[in-house]
Image 1 (tube, one colour):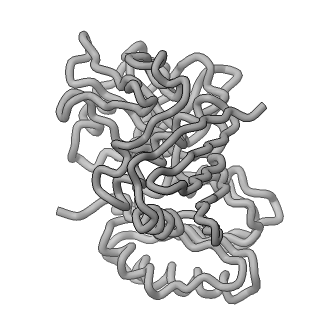
Image 2 (image 1 turned 180 degrees about the vertical axis):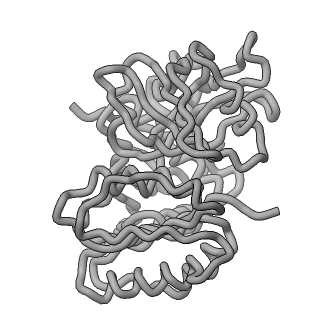
Length: 341
């Protein structure tokens, strides 16, 4: 049974909702009707905003209460991104009784195992209860690392039903790929690339079984439905590329190109026989950018329905994005996962 949230956004004018619709269309297909209704349906759920003279009536629908909270938070973020402060006018029916509670898409987990996959990759197996919602609709989660583990400051719900995050510095919350999940067994795996910078590298390197960590999600896109894929990226994209390849149908065709800094970082990845898996060493020919662009163009040109994904450094993503044009029915996602100093 679907979870539904009804709400209201006020005050708001139609140009602000048009700006929101334009922003939303960067991520999914959006319909704007002549009677000023904005709707979209995606893997995470459905959003409807119905303009009504200075206000908008809202309806969200998702598979679960956890997914509904993700959708509610995503809507708030996108409204503020479209027009600064716009989300302040959000209110949700029956949200008042939730104030101060932990969000439904939050889980307190503990480290179960730590495994070194390569010189710079660690796999953390996290244990938590009721993880079924993490196995649907999104490939990524937030790893919530409190500044003071003895007195953690976790996110809470506001009176308006939106997730309120702790003050800056109280909670580090980077996004990572759910590398694998067994919801029935109450465990999921996260692979951490030890690039030598940031709190998560230090936390992961020191992690021991039993250590607490918060998780929130899932977010991001879902597993491609297409049987023709082109995947590419550096170490930061390796976990999501590996998960997609290992769960792809056996008759899937295409290419996957992964760049690493050293041959010791090359990992065994199960993949369909029709998908070519190429490893590129950074600084050596052929360069990932040119090779990926060529491979992606070939997959797109082969016919409708291809899906293309690239994840990596911001400058690389910006260089690739304008070159690749989605063909008929093709999906192209070029993502900047990090920015060089």
